Image (tube, rainbow, N blue to C red; front, side, top):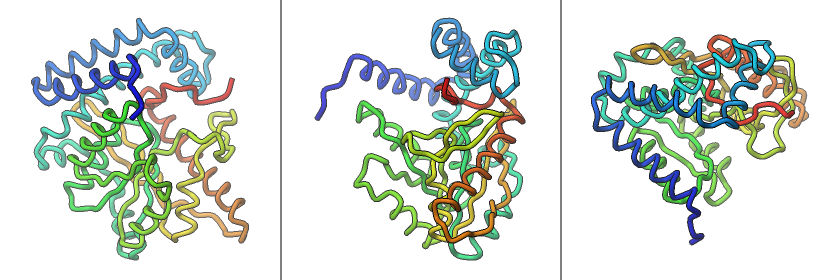
Length: 296
């Protein structure tokens, strides 16, 4: 086993500590701590702050460094801190409370897809609380599977695997045997919901798209999986609300088939990008994009 670096050990104990705090302190106190932590991070992490500010500026049509972009970045840090508190605290909430604090729009679109027996694919941007979306579906009796990117150290990846499985989701690690697509296709054939957070290309080989007037790349996986299995692809953003969350289930994305798989994947991915753009524009500060979203 590869030896952990000091930074990796620190990351593990930070998340482990956050998990314990979120699951043990009263919610009001925990939210206050999260807000303070978000504000502290905004002031202390100069490089990350500049990255978030640039991303927010792009969405808002501002110049990086403008008062509006800086204010949006500050609020983005605060909401991201709340995400981390909320996501661990979800495990302490009874199913009825998760239901009561979540507003969901368009669930009938998932139900219609499942009636056809091919499952469905929900593509999410890093918005609001995607763990909450999985937990809501699970407590309402839906079978949901997602994919987890490889994290270091290994025990940090295992912490998140256990956490999301405790919320009722099945998780397939990307660091597994390399047959993730085959596993997801099999589960779709068994009428599962596949949830993919898909607004960042980790491979460097994603589909070129345009978002907010500038080129970037998105992963081809959601579109390729949809086209190869017949499962509909829907964009489903989650938004943070003062006392809970709002999930929006989009219409299935549709485009004429040309017979050229590469072109069809690109077309469907660009439609996904357009829906991501609309979702992010509706609440830019709720977009937890803390890595460069566009090439500079």
